[in-house]
Image (tube, rainbow, N blue to C red):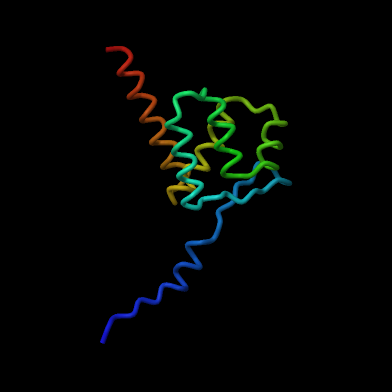
Length: 117
């Protein structure tokens, strides 16, 4: 008899969209689908775009136009934008925000170390 794998319940649980609360009144679902992840990866590899343009496009892909417009209207600092991007990356990787922030910090220190040599 062939094996049967019933993953319906697990898929339903894993397919729940994470959310990010920008403030008390603005909670947005994060698009953590495979197509969104592929589009974000392509953006990160696009050498013709500037860093800030990439960040803005990642927010549009992951949070949607309405959320991106709201975030832009807040006139956030770069560290605040980076935090939103880190939340998106954590959702895509199914990781905690802390894990992603540690990896980002590690990457920054490595880059700084490489520049000094």
